[in-house]
Image (cartoon, rainbow, N blue to C red):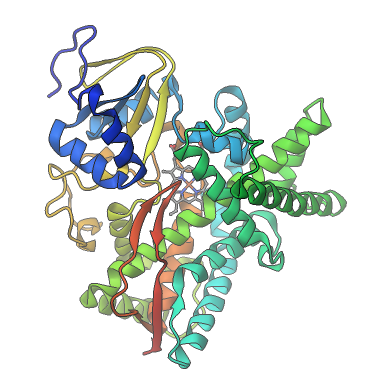
Amino acid sequence: MSPKATPGRVPPGPPRSATFSLLKQLAGDRLTLMSTAASTYGDAVRVAIGPKTLYYFNHPDHAKHILADNGANYRKGIGYVEARRALGDGLLTSDGELWKEQRRTIRPVFQHKRIAGQADTIIEESAKLVTRLKAAGSGGQPINVLDSLTEFTLGVLGRTLLDADLTAFESAGHSFEAVQDQAMFEMETMGLVPKWLPLKGQREFRKARSDLFGIVDRLVQFRKANPVDPPDDVISRLIESTSRESDPRVAATRMRDELITLLLAGHETTASTVGWAMWCVSQNPDVAQKLHEEAVAVLGDRTPVYEDLRNLKYTSMVLEEAMRLYPPVWILTRNAIEADEVGGYHIPAGSDVMVCPYTLHRHPAYWEEPERFNPERFDPDVQHDRPRYAYIPFGAGPRFCVGNHLGMMEAGFVLSMIYRELRMEVVPGHQPKPEPMLSLRMGGGLPMVATEV
Ligand code: HEM
């Protein structure tokens, strides 16, 4: 139980004199740094770096308080602020009234019923991916499955949200990567490097951003010329919402920021979820076998339909367990508007606060053998007595992921359809390295050889 709060009571943590070594670790192995801080100092840690003091909380109750119960007291924090320089003010990075308006505009597009209507598109794109894997596998060629998954998720988002074939814009994938790299650079350098410096990354970023602007502008022009009835897709809703802006330049910028953010937030997270799941499955042949058996039993050899999803129970357990060990959004940062009290500790107004799904999902108090991949933990037919906020892959509270149904549906169908027909083996000796960037990237990709079963 939290000790009683007294004003000014601060969590334990490394001394400020450790700044240099902390900075070195921050630039290097951030996951180990977070894990070590939690195991050394406990569920509440104060991290003093130079003039900055960060508060890092690693208890489900703390996560609940910061993200949900008192979520209104927190705006987005470190990383998001810097990523905003690259991504602009989209739903992921914005705050306050603008965020509320954006969320109101976009939320209906992601409602369960509407997303269910997109199942056929997802199934079609999944089938295309399986065909590509088979083609590579027939020649015994390894294929970087992560790239294929990224292409798949971008394809799905384009079709489901924008009614457009984004893969037809050949440069789109590369441009998203460059924008993302810049967002990460901004995070790592805490936004301190001026934008006007003639750095290669900055040049590439500007080129990529203007390429994406061009793509988005074309999609918007097309929709304006070809309105749909009812106008309930993302672009139509944004056209309507931004038309209330008095300055057309502000309207155009909002539209661009919003669409680019949605595509970015949606495609890498889902690709990474499936990628990490496939890696974990490749290390556990019994899980691979069960996945295959479920896919054959539920899907047979027909084209899947939406209703199949609820019967892909084991597939969903595998995905949930993969997101436990490798949560695509590995850290959630916030900045306190007013002073707060978390777990009995005083948090001054303006403080930077962090909740880390990566460490929370491996917290030994809530997870037995936390490092072991074990999908049975998520068996819905078994009563699990762990706190709700010990597992937060989609965040919590007002900023909860809008795309969770879409992401889980994509991941469920594609994983099951792959393992229905293929045995997937990682190239011997390959070990992907978790890279904690904007999302938990799979460093080194995922080269696999597909064999038909
Ligand atoms: C398995 C896949 C996904 C995971 C694990 C995931 C995870 C998350 C998490 C943890 C947050 C909260 C961030 C925070 O509180 O700071 C978030 C927010 C968000 N996600 Fe997802 N996401 C996934 C898929 C998607 C998809 C498919 C889309 C849509 C295209 C999407 C769009 C967004 C947006 C726009 C936000 C910001 C919401 C807001 O602040 O109001 N995500 N996501």
